[in-house]
Image (cartoon, rainbow, N blue to C red; front, side, top):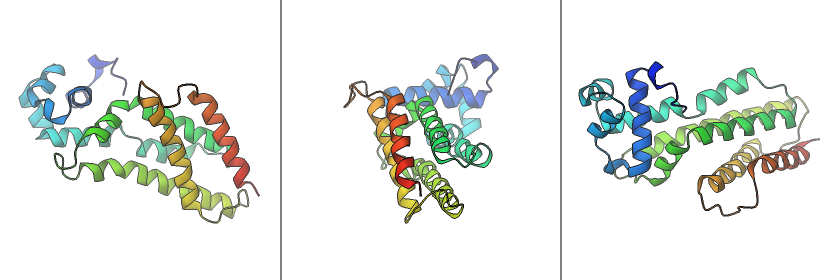
Length: 199
C-alpha cells in the first residue's frame, strides 16, 4: 500500500488509503466519513458516491489491498516445483504483502465483529484462500514424488501459522522475541520444513 504516488491515484484509491490510515490510528468508530474524505482531499459526497457507507469503504479496502489475488498469481506463474525455492518465494512474498498491509491487519485485529457485521468473515477469506492454494501445491508436489505428505492441508496450515506468528511478532513495537529477526527465521523455517517433507 504505497501511497507515495498520491497524485496519480484515482478518487477511490485515495479514499481507501485515507480510510485505512485513519481507522488503524483511531478505530472504526473514532473516524467519520467527513474526516476520511478530507484526509483524501475529497468531499464527503464523493466518498458516498464511490462507496455508500464507511463499512463498505473499509470492506473495499480489504478486498483491494489484501493478498489472495497476488498469491494466486504467484502460484500460477512463478513456481519452479522445487520445494525449498518455492516455499522461500511464498514466504518472502507473504511477508512483503503483510508488511505492506500492516494497517489493515491492525484494523482486523482491533475491530469488534458487533460493530462491523460480516467483517471478520471477509478478513478470513484471504487466509482461507491461501490455505487452499498451498494445500493444492503440496498435493501436486506429492503426486510428482517430490514430497512425502500424509496431510497436505495440515502441512499448509502449519506453514501459514508459522509465518503469521513471525509477522505478528514484528507487528508490535514491543516484540515478544526482539533478538530474532525475520530474514534468518524465514531461511531456517524453510530449510526445516523442506527437510521434513522431502522423500
